Image: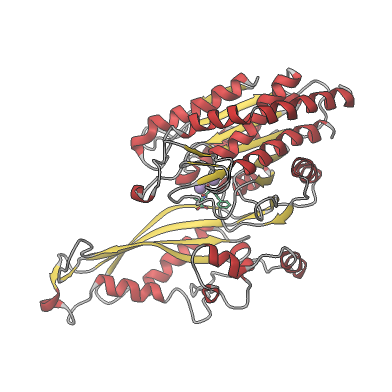
Length: 483
Ligand code: BES
Ligand code: MN
Ligand code: MN
């Protein structure tokens, strides 16, 4: 096909997308109504419906799309949407793998939502008095809204050119277990190595921008090791007057042990924890300093004063999120938590403990080292029950590939600004798996904002971000066709 035919198609694509935003929002609202909470088996049917919805959308845009089952009888999984666009006969660019996830986090605490999480609310007051136009729903930005940008761009290219993905050779993988640890993803990748391994690079839209109107390409995500530790004491709950002070209280003992996870410099004390951590290159530090990130302003948005800027000493606010590992307590439970008072020493207490990891840390190794550390710190008379929930590898991706340059050009053409190169503290386990299993690099082009309330009540996606992301995906097709 000639370049002028491409530009004719592109002009049609951009005009279709401009005139089609209201319809796009309606479609997204339809999808957001399906409560595809992957962690809760009650919602298995909803997960399947959400997968089918996306598969049908891709099918109508000319993709060969189907649901692939995952898991087994003992370990049931949610389906993966797998779709193909064969590519035009004269397509010479790279075979793209697009990855996204259709599952969402649980909506609770429900009482903190201002509108029901699965009754998407469009706030679109032209006066702007209510704040920027946005869609509020669970999954609005993570990740249905961001996958929608891609789906709409694919729809427009099909309408404009008659070809699936406008003639780009493409495989689409939409996962339904990203928010619950991607339990069946690795075995799916293993079982479909030939099909997925034919791809050259993966594109994921599940990250954020630097700020409003400041698009970004993310080149690193952290890994995760998620555990639960239960400290068992007496074989029964006890009267705290009779037994306090003469036998161990599992809650007090648990918090004393866990408090030792950090030293006075807020460094993690598990032996060997930092062994594989790659140091931050001075060139990276310099680049990050130029981004103009203001810690005090960022903290203010979530209600903190400037002196809340705490973390591992010797590293900046941004470095601590992007390039340093952390330990977090995500939940702690024990004893009496109901109304009023109860003088009890419980038989056990538990905590959810997770670690964000950076290259080249390994979640399996870290979990093992943490469990050994727990055993080495067993309070007298007590016993641990140690549970490994799930993990994911960190991933740092190449920034000098021709595909990443094409994505950057696409974003610049769509948004009028060059994307910044950033990292994120969040985790997207598929990137590490694609890299280690298939040698695939990933390009994260995401359009979320820091205050989108990802995983929280009143999650939102701003329509301006939706527009920028949709146009960026449309231009990406054009850039790939020119390669
Ligand atoms: N989309 C997020 C990851 C993310 C969050 C990237 C914020 C950039 C900014 C993803 O859906 C997510 O929540 N991942 C989990 C992974 C876990 C469940 C294995 C996370 O980071 O906690
Ligand atoms: Mn996500
Ligand atoms: Mn998420």
